[in-house]
View 1 (tube, rainbow, N blue to C red):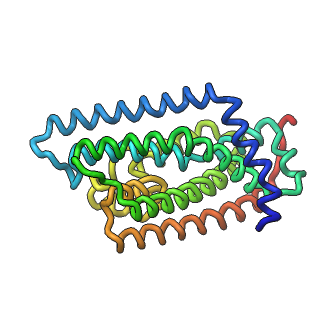
View 2 (view 1 turned 120 degrees about the horizontal axis):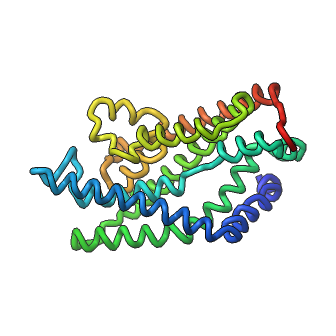
View 3 (view 1 turned 30 degrees about the vertical axis):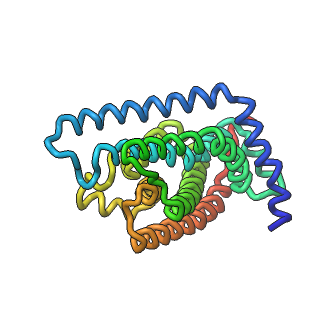
Length: 271
């Protein structure tokens, strides 16, 4: 394990340096995501203002505000652009350089992304979490953060990132067959946002939402958010964390199988 960490440590450092070097791009991307979050905030404000009930499907207005921003935070931290990077490298031929290096193909992407995640934890996660807890304290009049539940949320977030990473890598390997993933990658993002509960909470979808909660998409966003908000009991938390672990193992194995198959069809364009 120590040897492996020593091998991939430079990739993590490269991920941190990349975030620092392209900090303007990072800032504008973050601002764009925050603006989308506020758009959803005003949409749901209008929904609650026009409703005769103060609670919709178990969500009060204050719950929905917290849900929106925790969903944004969770989605941002668990996001993986593995499919975009792999598709781009296959298109321009630079994937060949990765193939000749004596390192694990997908681990290079993983440790490089982890470098960026360290930067995001310090710059994004901590300030927004403090702001959310300040909002909950102002609204409720008491300190709402449950430390054990927050730690379980962090565990769920780690599993969600693992699922998203290996799902994205698996999807990226399809570029060996399709040659270009730009259009389908956009469709993938829309589907994930809807099925994961990032656009509309799964509780609002009735029986269909209950079915979606067992799919891997819910594990990417809905599960960690509901744990953070304390809307799952311990039995549900244990079940959904176990489900996340199952999906993580599934996509890890699937990524290895797809890569083995895709390598037999490798055609490099450019390079």
